[in-house]
Amino acid sequence: MNLGPIPDEGASGLAVSPEYHPQLLLSPNSDIPAPYPTAGPPENPLKQLLVLEEDWEFEVTAFYRGRQVFQQTVFCPGGLRLAGPEGGDRTLPGQPITLPAPEALLADRVAKGYVSRVLSGLAGGLALWRAGQGLCAQRLGPCHAYWAVGEELLPDSSRGPDGEVPKETAGSVFNLGPFVTDLIAFIEGSKRSPRYTFWFCMGESWPQDQPWTKKLVMVKVVPTCLRALVEMARVGGASSLENTSLDLHISNSQPLSLTSEQYKAYLQDLVEDMDF
Image 1 (cartoon, rainbow, N blue to C red):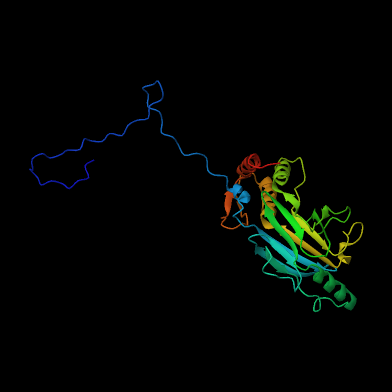
Image 2 (image 1 turned 45 degrees about the horizontal axis):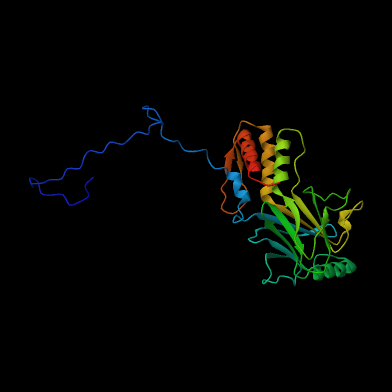
């Protein structure tokens, strides 16, 4: 193709560009044209869960002596910190989630005093953040805290905690790999649905073999993307051939329309990209 200026008609020495014929791709050692490469399979949308730049959404609910006193759903770049009314230090990492003062929330004067002491002991707070394909927790104040993964409606008081939140170093509280593996097994009917709700008992021992509603401060944290994955598995099992909408509840994500088989295939593909 000649990109120079077009000469006047009839000018001598007119340069004529040869007609361009697109070349066919030839297979090696063959004169038969090979087909043009086709587009690859669509990218697995669930892999957004592994991208650290994508912020997860968390639903945080606080209970004082079993009474719900606070709930907030928020995206937390860099993680969150469960802190008392005076512990929202912006110089510390993570977004502070300020638990309310108990004065206007509890009638029992003695309980108010004890809850206030627990909240004061949180100091910088209890930090929870994403690390790789999991979640880590660490307490930044003197107040001890115990954690366990349980049901969304109530913690499991029939057994001990999964651990104590460490102070000197970060402690792992969740790994997405086993969660997705258990979710696939649940879809196939061989396991119960995996748990995704994190319960924290502040300032006291875990409520084993006793009512959790007697504890001064209990905080429930739900990564809403994990809840959405489990709900999708439950709905998809009832209507495997119909498209179901899935919202991952992470930043920059769009609702997905998937059948149960597509969803299971994406989960299996996701497992192959994770470390165990």
